Length: 361
Ligand code: 2P0
Image: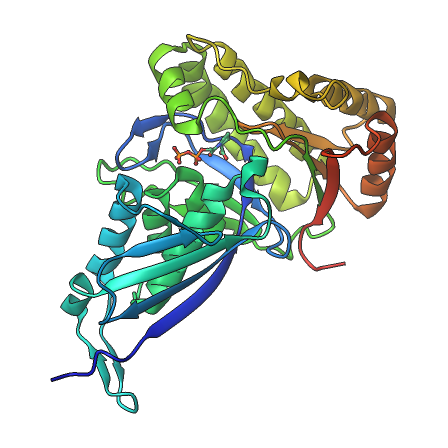
């Protein structure tokens, strides 16, 4: 019979992304279809990314996955949906030298092993699911010889974690909510690549490694069920901001970019407070760190912008404790880091790192 002695492998790396117009709320939980469009910036892969190696061999007896070296279960619906969608699109593969021939339908019988590592602490509350699912889907698509473009792959990554669909592209990315019940048009679209506006500097202030209390999934479910503000946000506010943000990115208009980014972060947290019971992400950190406090960061940055007369920095906070700050260039970033380090002198578990978008410095 055929040899069971072969193994095929593929490796990929995908960075995390930071939303500047936020995704919050689903219209379909199983397919992960959002109630509004969102826009994000993909970070430089050297700093916050997942690296995933996938393998297939006739000797593997079941699908298995290891995250940062520890085996995790693949039984969850999100993993199962991604694996099923990929197997449905898998192509045939032949390597005559090694005597390997895989037919399309063989992928339903072959099992895969997946090993993924984050180059940042998973517990730090930095969107690890976005990088993780983008990387898992991309590496498996390579392995399985899936002949789909990135926008098609984004509909699969989306079913792993909504924000993951945006991490398949670098630069500025829009996730269009789409209209179809099937989710076929709920895809990621690249607005501009990573070279378009590469003097931007993104500072990720890692505040706390404490796990957030409310997961994004249950948080947004609560908001959709109980917040009235979220309806206004999804129907009226976001559609107009998406157009303005696309224009700001196209024109590299930092002042508009910063104004929209800050306003959208604050409205997202307002929706969280408008949820019953209220979800409070913004002051999570104040429990453990008296000094490093989200609201203090906001007031320092708002004062900085008012002093300059025009927004010189943008801030945004996700469903976790860390502050993400965007500066228009390195000079402003350095001045700002100096200011922040004055207010928040480095302590044992309070680390400021800067991540540069685009070309490495
Ligand atoms: C975003 N967040 O646009 C928003 C802003 C958090 C706040 O996407 O349930 O982990 O897996 O689709 O993608 C976090 O939500 O949620 C998120 P699921 P996900 O980045």
